[in-house]
Length: 86
Image (cartoon, rainbow, N blue to C red; front, top):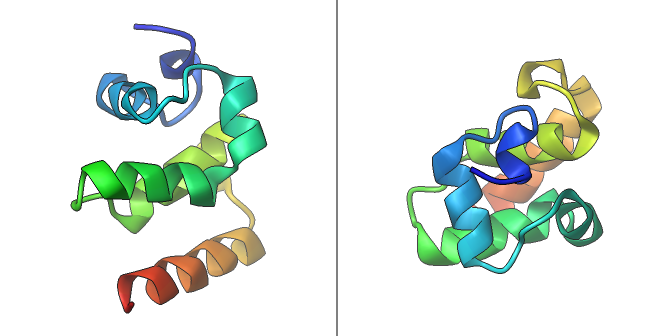
């Protein structure tokens, strides 16, 4: 396991997916942002759900996904619903 799996919410499987889409460091993940990173994962794994999006955002912030502020969760949910209904 590498650098990303040391982050909150990122286990071996999500780290492998992030690596597969070219994201190998926290810096790369931060620069890309959770929404774009999740979109890349969604392109290779159609089962990527909103919880994975929350997990990535939490990892970027260095917190558990359950600790994300309500407004951040609402923004991510709005994004997820928009993308899922396309």
